[in-house]
Length: 395
Image (cartoon, rainbow, N blue to C red; front, side):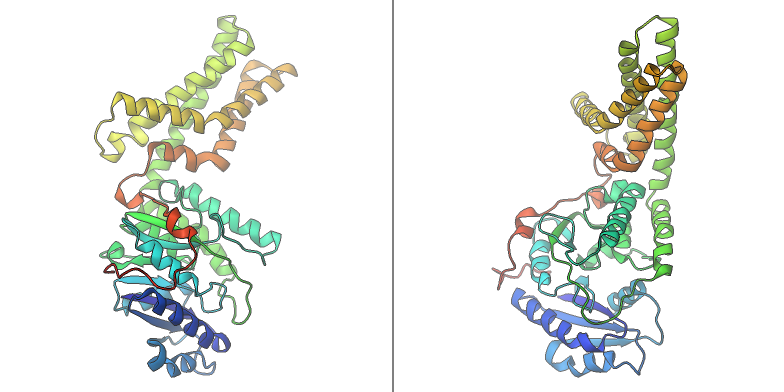
């Protein structure tokens, strides 16, 4: 049974349409369902009364809360009252088209998938009504999440989505502690899910209803990421990773200066040698201390797997290494001292990796445990919604 939570705040004008479209779509899947409206509007708005009037027709239940308490807590209150073994959430204002629910159900039926997300950022997803500024802020927020939580989110295209389904067993015994409005971050960070699918959808312009996002929620977002980094152990991993990177930086600069001044090597030979030896050192220490068996408790890797991991690591670091070399050579050509040129090159490459490349580098070592495994069910998400499913799969 699917329990779909729809948080509302002053959405009396649209809630009826939303509920009817959601119920129609879920009926087509063949699955039992309930719609749970969690309303913070208060008695004068009429949102809860409108939803209550449709209870018999559409399998709707209404939870009335005395004041506006936040989107994430509304979802949690709805899930606590849920009777189903699949939980979901979507907005009431029709920016999340209810018809996408059919494809989310299909995606969740794929073997091993415990979370199905409506995504704006996989192939086929769109945000056509967004101005350039909002599009940039959304992309930046998504990248920041992957940067802070790369073991969890590096392969998730839209961890900020507000429309998704999750099997209740993935959250059994898990204490969710959301801060702000992004409940999906909590589900992905703390939940015990095996696989994940993302379904493309068109994020529609707001017609009716009011935005639940304000300055307070925006300021809470980085604090929420930091809390999850601590809770998932990725903060400790980050500290080890940064320490290894710092040691590699000193090794790069020191080796370059030693080869040029002490060994008489030409710049063009000393530079790639120093960069490569620093990369190899970083790989070895990350394998030993940051991501390898000593840190994750996994079994010892084979020689073949170590070589494959090293090859992936070299590819992931190629852009940063190239920027390092280019900056160093440019400064040397301008008359800078070797130590200064190499230091600036290392800094340039390190900043590039930090801003753009950390999720890809961390994924070289693969997901850490079953909770982090991500499987995108492309066959499921690319098909249009089916009018009826070939059979229930025992949600």
